[in-house]
Image (tube, rainbow, N blue to C red):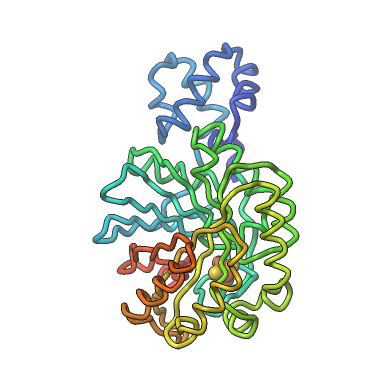
Length: 344
Ligand code: SF4
């Protein structure tokens, strides 16, 4: 392991401690901070407004990063999937999504290596839980994208591998850095959870402007239990109470994620049940047509059933979107991230 301090993930105050020790001014700390977060340099040599001698001193005690891009795949729609490797050899996937008609660049970051929740449709869950990511490893994913593309990420969604609310402390610290140091507005940060109820109550007390997304994926207990074992511990009835509490406390509209699977939860009856369940929940609904992976027998819904489901929900007055399938040719779509490359 490197003895040097890794600059990525440090606040300006933390960088100041290093520059103080090197007898540099506080202004140098600000310059270094900008090079890391706003200009996303890959090496200290690129910090060209620092004197050569200052760069040499800094290089003796610090490095920009210690993570590596193991693999990078670019989809025909512009989505880029990275397999990133940390110092201990563990790997996670991070995805950059671009939308042609918008300036938004959205990073989908992982919060854990593997995941303990083990949803039956999810490739990550099959690995089981390996470890939490540190807050630095979370923000490093955004920096890796910025360094590689030279572009500034504008939105971050915690929808990659892992259950963010089972690693809440690191996720909250990462969100603070994304907000303060990357200057990404809180409203451009989304945390997606399978429904870890105690953490939802905790988040409600934090008075944040970020968006909470709930992976609901079913309209009744039995179907949700089949898809998500977490339903056994935190069921839809208790989840409903937690969501009402969260909305009352924060006055924020939540997002409901609903994976549509052929003949399982895309029926007329499911739509009606869902309308009833969400009738007093201030939310937008995001429908995600299932992308089949090789390891289960769930099927993709037909386009007609997706449209019928959408229209039934819309009749209840909710805003409903169908998530564009992005990066499915490189397995970067929802539920397809695995944190490994074929042959590993
Ligand atoms: S869908 Fe999310 S919560 Fe469920 S197993 Fe996969 S990574 Fe974990």
